[in-house]
Length: 353
Image (tube, rainbow, N blue to C red; front, side):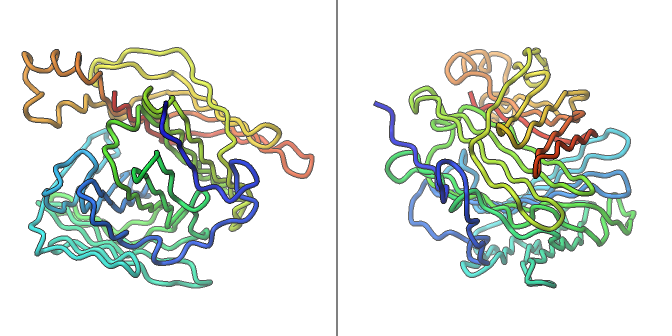
């Protein structure tokens, strides 16, 4: 019998008639004594310089050993199509995590939450590793959001939490790359994940992405569990109009298009996906470009070799990561009116098996 899976929706059904009020503590450290506890804070921004920059502040990743050190990670996608990745770990005595608000310090790198106008959060991040530095301020244009009460429980104590501290943010500041500093503006996003458990044994794969239009903002995720947990799929979606969240639901239908094999990730991906909330939202994403594709076993030193990797694939499957640039068609039904928008956006797929 599969473990009972409980999503935290406020109801009725798998949706929120009333939104959970996100507090600073929801974005803070979730204290746990479990050796399987994990937690990280994530920020990304699409900048007017043409760069997309990503920052992770990590206490522990789900796949790491319990005794691992905290780390920071920087990803830069350049306007020329280049990709730069830096990851640095620090001893535990050089890291602090507040349980009252997002106040994370790992080495000299910091991510701190303040309160801005209209009580909307402001996040200030500083990272400096190798010849790269970010000094960026993320000012919320929307209230923070959680799907329901944030946690999904996979039987017993195993759970996964998601708090979107910054669903849509105005970004200002500077980035320094190879000694050259550029003053930037852009649009950003910030979220926070925590939990307990071996996610590789719980999660099979997920899709995740966002849309930012002049009048609408949309966030989605679909998370499929492993066979032993019944192939349960969580499908949280948030839709905002202007500065107001108008929909928070898990009652979403996912359809995937034909699969195509990608050699860099050593696995297949769907050429399009479609997400529908009957009578309310219809979103189709058609993949135009693979920005990033990775075989996740390449991050595991013992599994990298040509001799060992086929054996590992036979045992654990083909874990892979994709970052897509897709065109989209979004249809929203509001007060009997059908509104259609088109454009392009980034989204990702991660498969753990």
